[in-house]
Image (cartoon, rainbow, N blue to C red; front, side, top):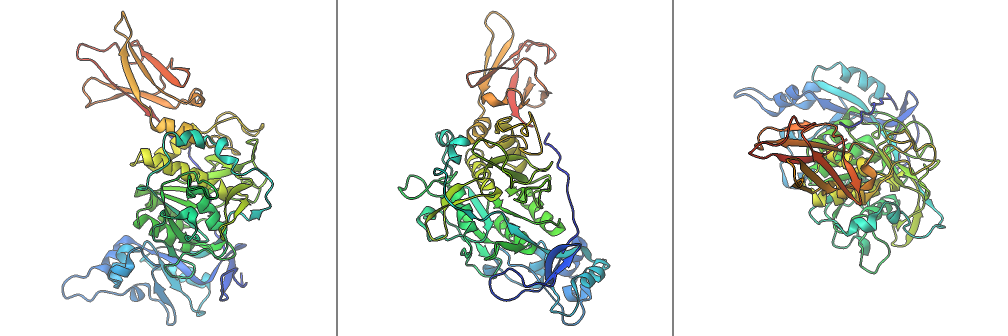
Length: 509
């Protein structure tokens, strides 16, 4: 069973000029937090979506505008949807495929007023501000040796097992990516720019290119640096503007786009101070469709993890120094899952040069890259399985006193170890009889660091149709990368009968 993470919801949203990429954008503030002053986000109840999308013979189908009783001057639209260029764009099709809608206020009313009267409409499942969040880090001057993080997380040894697969797509939701760089050559699939509303997710800030390089930079090409995964494909999705800020609607739409377009892993190195039903819905839908979702604790140096890192379902990553101590800037709390190096991560810059970056933004991509490697050997990998493999494989107790044995709020379950997680994913069981007895010996490959983590369950069956689980097997021994367990009948209700017995090893938290 995975650890439960508390969900933190802060109702939030000022009249400023948006830190954007061109035109002025009106902002608003609610409860001290910033959102768009120009729109709200809305989700219709399923029954009303169905009523609008389908009409009985002879019956006039109500429009969305009529259903919501929008005042004159307001308008409603859907975000860009993956594949919309080749599919019909009628209202019924929009409702079928869009996970949320955007109500543009056009200066005719305030965000607060729109929230009030839309919230009273029986057709509305949820309505909320379009919160403003930010990306995770800014560049730092170079003074550490290049790519020190790879050996720390055992990536070189992991690459002996796999360097990734082109069948795995990693979506980087960020400031965009300079896809013309040689570090991404042959690896890019189409993405989208939700900041400017077009199909060109170019980077105008640098953060996204650096994050993408940390995950997927080409290796063995005699150029620059290596990413964690050498062969996965990159889906660049721009959801942060030139000032590294972005609205939740961009993030949610980007997640929807990536999910519909075949991404297996999504990395969102960004977060905000407010919870969001809309963004939560997009994340949960992605996870339900087999996507691995990775995000950050953020870089405020406080005990408040930013949303969506507070979601129990998210894989939430903090940052560590060279000595595995938590970095001063890395946020902490009960929602953290694990940590990875986050100081002076050497990666490719927007113009193709190499630069050092710091922040949880550069810890999370290492975890996303590890998840992509896991998916290359375990294509059906789910979010729950990825979280278990990553956290069980993590090295625990390697930092200072804050890194307490087991789970703690500062390091989660430990610091990323890519090799250990891959080893767990490739557990192979050997079964033999103990010489001179009816007892059975089970043996399998096991990372040394899982000995104290209760990482394994054993289940057995006489016929492969009904299984019994030994939930906490007693007597597992660990020697030289192998685990062994003897079935002497005490934990399985007796020794195997004449028909024999089948066994399986389960890896779980």
